[in-house]
Length: 305
Image 1 (tube, rainbow, N blue to C red):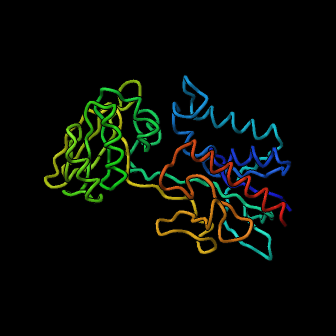
Image 2: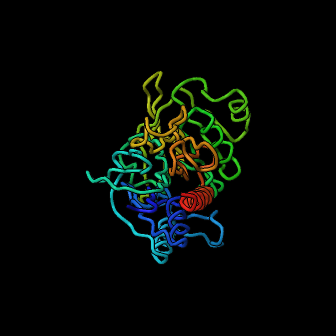
Image 3: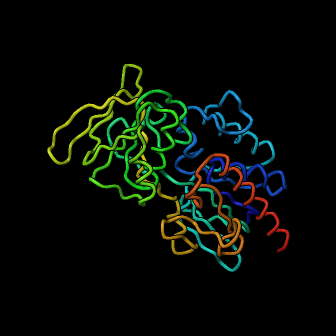
């Protein structure tokens, strides 16, 4: 029987591990299919407090990992396949084996939706990203593009106008799906140029394996052309990693965990932290804060039992 099991090793999970370990709870931390979470796909993080020169995303995660281990956190590679709550005990199935814990902190994150084009994985962090807030400042005075037509795409495009020389908004239809106010803001901005009825056919890299341009297809005529951009921001949504918990825990209409209050879920002893329950901010620092809150809530809940 574990005191605390933490699912996920992104900023939320590792911060929860640090706090739980320092509280002498000896947490067991489950590293899933993408150890370190989305931050490991970011080459440089400039907006995490305490690193005035910036820090590589993978290095930041590695430091947090070592910090948690220093205080007694234990790590196990494996992904949660199922979840059950049995007579006051929270149980997770990992690699066909059931693990039991009093408190469970779910920090399994969210996965950005990608286009599924060739060379996608190798270009992530080298001119391909899903987070303008994270990476926009690296592309000052150069053309970039945003793929998508919803509120998120408009928000990303508007944010990028602070840095880029031009922001192409690429959408498969001839009208945006975004709310009217967001669409109006984007379409009236002088730096944003909508490209209607257009789809991305390919990413085109330079000799240094960084984004040089994209191949666009006119979905009306079928014609293709190159568009020179230094970065592609994909804004077609995220999927919260909640699969094993569906039907067992409260999940909102968009698929994110929905805590009742703070980080506490509808099942006793279960807490949610980070992007798996946050569809608004999705930043490393907010994930870390929620991981801290979940660990403190779990510690207090255990003390009451």
